[in-house]
Image (cartoon, rainbow, N blue to C red):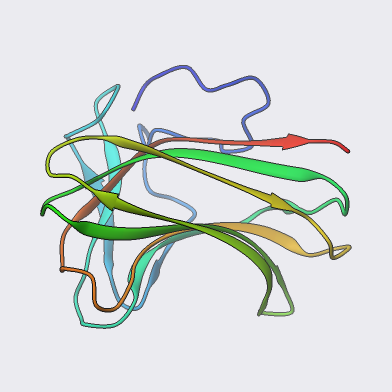
Length: 155
């Protein structure tokens, strides 16, 4: 998407207009771009390759400041009706997942839906990460992601 990023957006390329650089696959999913954007020319997304949790993650967004609240809003769309996705903001330290907040959403076919999640940071020095996951048991579908806004609210 090429929509304007909100002031203070912590994501360098929120609409995947340049690439999917910085995004990692979860569970062997195929991560890439598609010319089916909510805004602009491109959206990011992933296609599952197996039955387990599949998705994409933006890791090391920044170092968390304890006591700060981080808020993410993202637009998602699925290739099948009734697809379940989980959107998570989490802290990672030494390769371990620490505190996390997850919001689940059921995606209706062919519609972009906005999903929001907030996370209050606890751990000094932990990295903030963002994930969109198609959990095991959800219908297998290609999931598109666009216009990710991630902002910090100081306490």
